[in-house]
Length: 155
Length: 178
Image 1 (spheres, each protein chain N blue to C red):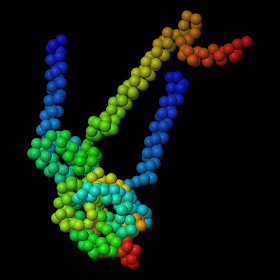
Image 2 (image 1 turned 90 degrees about the vertical axis):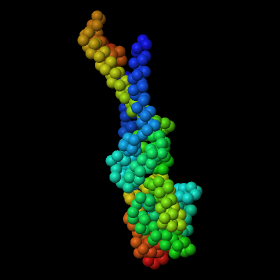
Image 3 (image 1 turned 30 degrees about the vertical axis):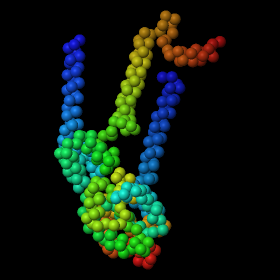
Image 4 (image 1 turned 60 degrees about the horizontal axis):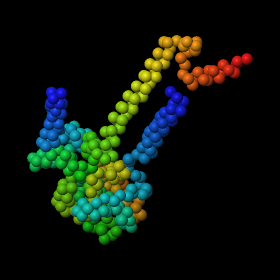
């Protein structure tokens, strides 16, 4: 048990430590991939426009001044708005952009699971064939309607 | 699948498709393009570059407006700034306002540009570029002329202005024979 807890802690550290290091000591190239040039709507990494050059110079200056990644991004958002971020922030209304795809995946998995369950049940009923009283393993609603239809011809 | 659930799912799917079609239609009929001459100039309220005080285009109603979109990193904007400043000094007592809109820029760069070019006409800061779509601005500089009734008049100059462009269009905006 102790070993398992230790292993989990090591894995958690392996994930969290690089993220924390990147937050405290960001590089120009990683910020270039996470920010958008406001005039050409490409990432800074892909853009050679004058404003992209100016933003790169700003990022270099802020890194040299010891700013964290979040501080640099916040300053750029203050200047150009949130559209400067390549990915929406994980807060407020923008959180929906992160959550909706997950909700969609969970919903789709639920629907597929439900349909697969129904399909496997109907296959089972078909394989079992007619029940002891000679009736087919039909859907109760369908069976009720069938009985009604047959009753009409019952003379 | 029960009948009601199936109908509900079909209705939801139809609703989603209808919403997407409505969005497509809205974008087709409301594209981000330059307004035609004679149409009302899209209004905006933006902070003044120096004071952060809100400045509304509508507040200049009754005056002709030279609306100039620029950014400090734009080379041709540096060339035309003296022309605009000179026109402002010549015409400000005749009911003309030159209004600069700085966009896609750093505050400090815009302020430095204004100081170096000796600009004294009002300049507002469009941090998020919200006016660019309404005026169909695709690059800098771009200039529009607006008459005293707030309508777009004259030529839309996409690119650097010449002195002749300015004179001709200011006269049109003032309702004088060009």
